[in-house]
Length: 228
Image (cartoon, rainbow, N blue to C red):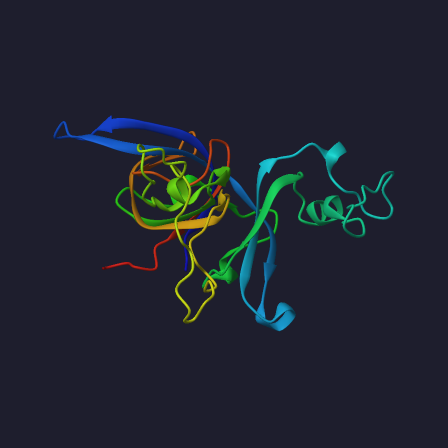
């Protein structure tokens, strides 16, 4: 992989191509992403580029031991985030992610910046994000199961039917589709097409829908299904 970037989902709209055909697109505010660390096989056991995206106030960023304040994580010890960003000579960032680039030697900490123009119109990408959380949902909404009878005194309208079997095996198998928490899972949509890029404003328009609510983080990578 040689091309990837972090973005925020702005929303959906529609544009017209040169032939006047309407195209539904997702608007993504992509980058700029600053390189905060370069990992190599010699030091870390693998090659990767760590990038930071979206400005964050320093007062809510965890400090190092020498700082005036160390914000403790309720689930563990304090994290020296500000020290990590200062070492990279950059401001605090909201999101920090790694990309397994093949050309890690081309990136320098603090000086290399990945912008929207790393991609081109017509490129195929994979978009990864966390889907919208729907809370608890029944099997009818979650999986499209059939509803029960609506008349003749039925009190079984939107409940799932029998989930087990007869005497054999006499139990419910693991993985059975049941009511439960719907959404809020990591989803990757593959082989999406970039239809327009505004390099000046770091905006990318992607054909079709991208998972996640507005303002959510979206990871854009060159597709693994190139040529298919």
